[in-house]
Length: 440
Image 1 (spheres, rainbow, N blue to C red):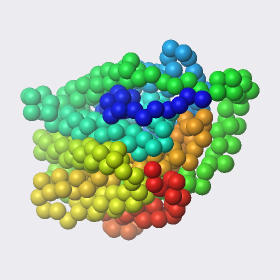
Image 2: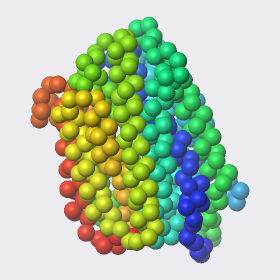
Image 3: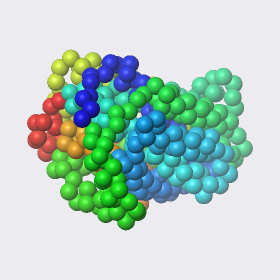
């Protein structure tokens, strides 16, 4: 059995650095695909449905990739790294070409391919932290990963604004995506590919703990049917903690899907009074929304730094940290409705950033303490169900139905809905009582 050693900050940084590129992809997708959809003529209420391919793909891809990576081993290429590379190549191509879509169906298709490709790389990165670190460093490892994600979110969300400041045109003829967005996606594609390569070249993986047992199980479970059967059995027998975390995840990711889908139309209309998608006023406002969204990435980075320092020194109560963080994010979303000046959005999204940092670290730290090491990949993939199912429900009309039913027709009410959902997510943590899971 391989004895896992405590790793230094920079060793954990290297194994997490590929997430910088993955987050460039997700931040550009989350911050600007709705803008692309609107530019191509999408109605505001139709935007969530155009997003549906992304979570549907994650629902299928992540458990399969997790299952396959658990059964992969090569002395040179490792277990998770082959999937990093495949996902990086496909994601880079999809990210580069997405803003060149000339019709809504092309943009929706680009989003589908992009999300599927990013998912191929993302799940093995989660499993790698659990593979490489002893349980005492799990919280620390996932928090460092969140630090890298925060950096990526902040920079990528600001890229179109940065391009505009450098003189790249921010407007275009009706139905055409501005060059500032195209340049941003091209830079994101480059960063995505190179950062994942950095992790591949700087990180070694441990072999399976019992190679003979690994080979026997691999030989006994060949074929698509065996894989489907095992994934189904693992879903049926998932740990109790995983089910409890599932409810927390449901409310959390429903809230953030609402933000990704509606932040641009809600804020450009409610705060800036801009609705004509071909106008300079709208495109300037949309750039500003990207800038404000970058705030939650920046704050998540600083919050992750604080958590990383604390987690490296003392045991932390993961459940309490997650509860308080989600409640803070919920308040941030609700405040968007009430502010009177655009600069106040920085305050709102700072609170959202606290929630985002916790969402990307605490649930995975709690989960990794309740899962068999040899099934870490497949369970990390299955856990993704609790991320994508709420997004599918939201995309199929859940957002439109709930915000109009509870708060009224105005699109800014989507942010009130997101806030309510994050508060419910925070309170749902109270169901998790296993001390081994809640304390690292």
